[in-house]
Length: 255
Image (tube, rainbow, N blue to C red; front, side):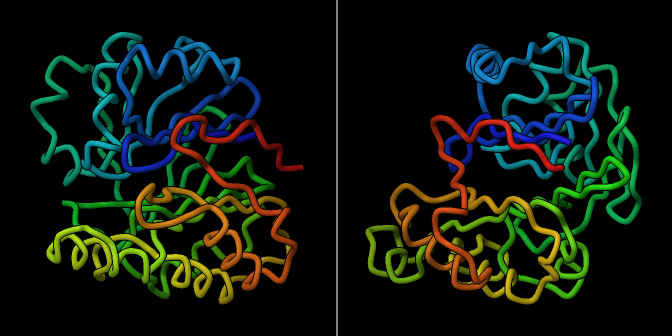
């Protein structure tokens, strides 16, 4: 199993997971031309995609999904709440599958397990991807942890974990107070220390890859995010990757 990112941050998100000839795109918050260019950079054409899974309806995750799906006749999987909140955009998209946040489903060679997260969206989920032997856990766009999140992500072989902001940078920055409250609230985004706290509670004995993702340009730095995760994982800072807005990150192999 391989995974890579087209880009990660408030300006657009997309993660690519591949097993054999199966390629699944998680979210697409980029324009059509930009998405194709980012896929090409990773050596993948849109025609190779097996489908798109969607976490929630915020524009940095969903804005490019419907157009990409219509252009290349791709199936899309998303919750009922997400579809309801973005229904107009999917008019004319023929292969729409509503998922139950409690039930795993299969796309080609990849088993995908959704799980619910606290976020200010209609019915948000995150996903764990598996080839039957290895598991990739993804957690972004959650305001706080839950026992269910920790149980779901424990024992993964790779983790992409949100480190959206440094709490001091957020609170001392120039965001309006209401936005600070939203971002830092229980239905907003995980800060560095919250993500480190989640990591510290997980079984990471099988972990081969750890990526900090969804970093805020204005309220965080890669160094702060990596430092927090390295302490929790008890590993060298150089071992931890960072997903960037411009380039995401290159392919990583789970062996």
